[in-house]
Length: 217
Image 1 (cartoon, rainbow, N blue to C red):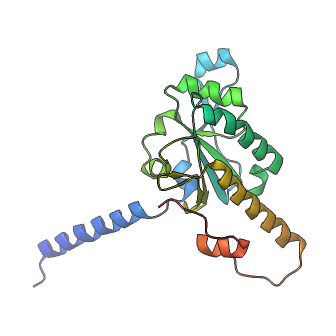
Image 2: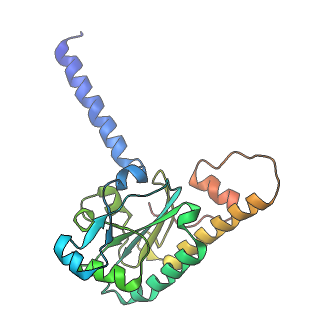
């Protein structure tokens, strides 16, 4: 029998179910990161006077994201970070629609700033106060660092430094990105019939001619 009370109970149940589903679904990266990215203030006096970081706003829409978990105290990070900076500059990732985001694992905001400036990171970072507050970002983190994750704009993981607890390394992720960029360049230089763009990560791998790469669950 229909009653207002039963309708209210059903509505609460439905909203709860939808909320749980939305929490498990990939997040749109642009919306997730909006207002939460920063860049270090270079001038020391200005940093002490106004703050160590300034807000960052992207000047374009990105198709892909590389989320980089790293810290200045991590020896393997000190080895890989210069490689990532060089790769970013040489491949001109920003111009090709790929945004790199640092998620610092440093213990203080000051250490995070010194690490970014010392390594010459040309990309923004998730603000220090947000690094432990975003569930979606926290779920991306593997058991150790350096940890690099490649995602599309919808937040779907395409390649990861980890396969569960097994460490594959960030170079494997960069190899995946390189193949994607090479495929894009080939498609621009070869006249061919228009083919619908891949809609899922599996379709993307097939289009790139890649074997399935381990993907974080």
